[in-house]
Amino acid sequence: MVYYQKMTPEGYKQIEDEIARLKKDRPRRIKILQQARALGDLSENTEYTEAKHDLGHLQSRLRYLDKQLKYAEVIEQKNDGKVNMGTTVVLKFDDDNETEEYKVVGRMEADLAAGKVSFDSPLGQAIMKQEAGVTVTVEAPAGSYQVTIISVK
Image (cartoon, rainbow, N blue to C red; front, side):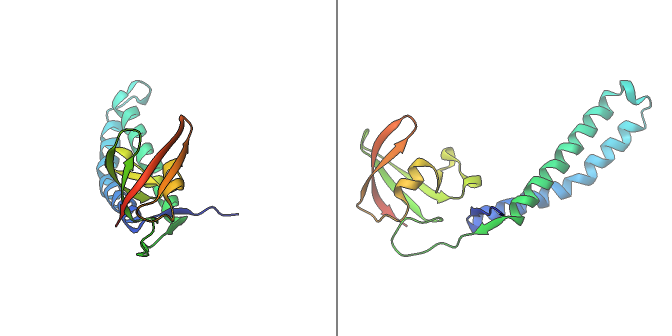
């Protein structure tokens, strides 16, 4: 069974952009490796070891990102007034009366500091398919809490 990774069109584009950037940087890293190899004895050549490691890391990252795109399921945003992947929500956390804005994204795109919450996180699961005005209970590992959906964009 193949497991497809759900992501937004923006997340897919971010991965494409990173792949393009890494591919553009690859010739520079190969040149550094060639220059370090020309320095002589490889057994004590720190520059060669580091350059080889850096190039290997780049190649590994490219393989990983290519696989992410290969198994990506791009989810188009629905405008049905409900929380779905790609929608932006304003939430009021009942324990502190603060409101916060989050975009609901795929697992690989999630970044709370950037205001992106995964659809399959405890918060994401609680708010998915809900409408503005609904209060839900989030069952998180640290305990339950209440969240009210103020708006869905």
